[in-house]
Length: 274
Length: 274
Image (cartoon, rainbow over all chains, first blue to last red; front, side, top):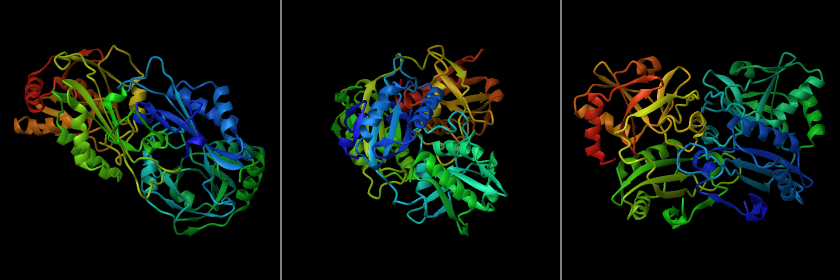
């Protein structure tokens, strides 16, 4: 990261207070957003998720117009990049109690596109992580800054897999460390319920909407690992690569199936990612 | 916090990189330490816990001699204060994967003593938090930087209670937001098992050792809330106030019992807190 591509509370900079509750407690939220032709994609949806998360954490957000303007300013001139937005509860005194007069901190950073071009056309080899996700309805679905479970999971492999899927302690598949997961079983599309843990991605949300429009039956429910393994099609979604087929899960291989291709094509048009 | 009382990687300062994995993911550990007569109390034990936590997170710590010297330097001249030490995995590129060549970040801060003098002699009024602790053996016991559960719990009350106790989803009492809890039931001392969640405090560790030396029977096991409520004595421990009797739990009142007083006196000598 370089200071020139980062704004901290609207000013070029690359540091935050060591006193910030984001640093002290992970008391904040983030968004990871694809940038194309100088603009953040699906900005309204990312902003809406940030607002929903802030309500759940009772975290005061900066004005929507302010962060929208800053995001637009920072993305200008970037053809193909990633925008990361972090909002925290800001500096605090000692102790978990939130300040009476919080001054939220916002950090925006535009960085290099992390994937090879065309990554979503190449099938992904995926593993099952040993690190499990704990159940916490108060935080489930949120893209918050407490990410040690994902950090631990990511220590489990190197370059040999594109992603790792994480299970909860009941043995249900929840999501990937950086993506959501879908499976076609019979002619129904399944994606895990995220009411206990996991991050509810923007692309997941869009995909559920588009599947309904296209008449593809879709169910959101707990997904045991053996059900996933026996799916005819599996794919991942996130805001950067869109829809990415899984062609291998541990030792088992999968074809890039018809429903995956239909949704990939449809989402590709809808969000202009990839 | 003021820059003069803070060291960041050994230098006076009060900021960290916005790129630091502590800020991005809560990827780090901390210690909260009582300072008396210019020195951090129980430093060796705090350092040892930091090292144990680092091993579990596979986090590379700065040299023990370096952080010991910096802590000593920063505490010099402080009669009655709090030292907070934070160590993170340092700056990182995008993504959860740990850098191949990590440069850990250390932040040390000496701040004002947060309690009235003699706080541990005054009985504490304690509540039961609605926010539950999730079970995650991979992180249980660690004083790590993912503290959103405690932040949410602390939003539940204002000044009307000294502490809130948190339960797991099975209804067992785990710990307070900033303390561990002990209960005398019959003539046995109980403290919750922390293999699934909670923070294993330094004073809890010392107290278990001292109870054994003093011949007080002690059991570490899951503690259902109704068992706690029916205890004859309840007390809290942490590194700042030492042993603090609970005189009220929600609506129920408790006397400051004999075992509490014995341990309080004994620990007071052993660690010189309060």
